[in-house]
Image 1 (cartoon, rainbow, N blue to C red):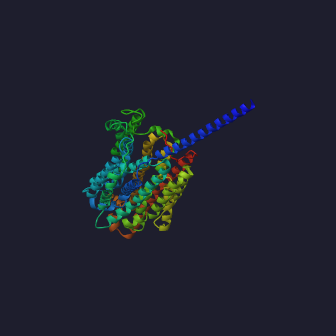
Image 2 (cartoon, helix red, strand yellow):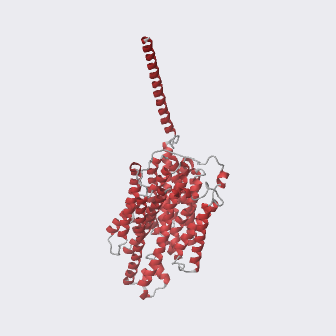
Image 3 (cartoon, rainbow, N blue to C red):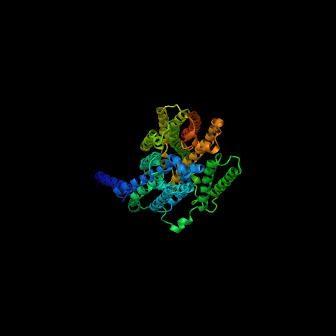
Length: 559
């Protein structure tokens, strides 16, 4: 009996051993399958490396062109005024592009969530090029503004298309570095904008080639756009007609009206219209009514439904995402104000040409690009994204406070140092929002989240330029009028002095008058730089209020 039991025990032991081996084998097979599945699920599986490299090149060139056109008007306005006149339209040469971009950003985001992203990229690039051609050939300032608006609509689609491609074809962890590359390309374009604009303005080619330059660059890349870019349609279950019907067209119109009217009243208020005048009050009233209608339409799904509404209100329930939007908006404001007003500062204090003044931005843009890349490379490792906003805010506040102290005698080296502080502070959080949003929302919400961050970035860049332009025009006019009161210059002479050295005041007056005018204008620019203090403080506070959490940027997709 004992032998039988021993034998039975051996059989049981062997059976258990075989079962254990079987389980281990099954576990190993399962792990192998998981690894295989993980490999299969990589967003770029089946896409040749050389095609992806060319695709990235095309996307980065598109972002570069977008950055180029965002700032190219900064140093051509004087030449445009000399050629086309109408100083009251001069601000719109710079503002038309970003204004149109922000007016259609949410609509573009919706389109990229419905239709083939390759063909949307091709179409929006074509729109951008048509707008650039109109700008180059413009016979009047009105035609130039129309061209800038058309180019802005196309540019918005190009920029959002690049972000959409990286959202689709990269993992969350990879996206931080790829999005930083978009920031680098945009930043490089934004510094080239004033340099190229200034170079053409000072050459026989004239300012028109500042806009024509986009045409050969896009023509060079068109084979890549048409034949290399991979196709991807997010919403394959719907027909094209069903997708078109799902677009919130009422929301799109109201969204555009709200942004355009707000920028309109900021631009013309005080300079073309007195703040208390009938036209200014009328625009404020129409803007307020439009805003209320937009809020009601989006909240109660009027003429749309919860899934199709344009503005992703449900994403605003996330405290982290709202604060990331605030941080993105303030860093974009710091970039826009610095890029536009530092060249102007040097034109007045150092009598720089348009090209020389633009080159003065090199310290800013080099450090801006460097810190954008540092943030993109390190954030997946550090994971605590709020630190970038806290440090960035502290640096922008410091740089803004120092720029607020400038005088005509402030040395070039000091101004460069102040620029660098703002560049570092703005660069650290500038592109982070896209990767954070993609990591924190469900996969089906990514296009909406990217659109929301894009509104914060490009939208506030446009709004900050409008606000800064309003400050510059209104405070500058008041300061100049007071400073030059004894010389009895007509109002149009005083206003034209704000456009630069082309004013009759600078061309014909004696050195004492020029010095008085320059001091008044530099004091105005100093006060515009005060915006950096405010935006830096908001950036810092937004970082402090963010959740103290780590974000996992590993490639895990959840619907």
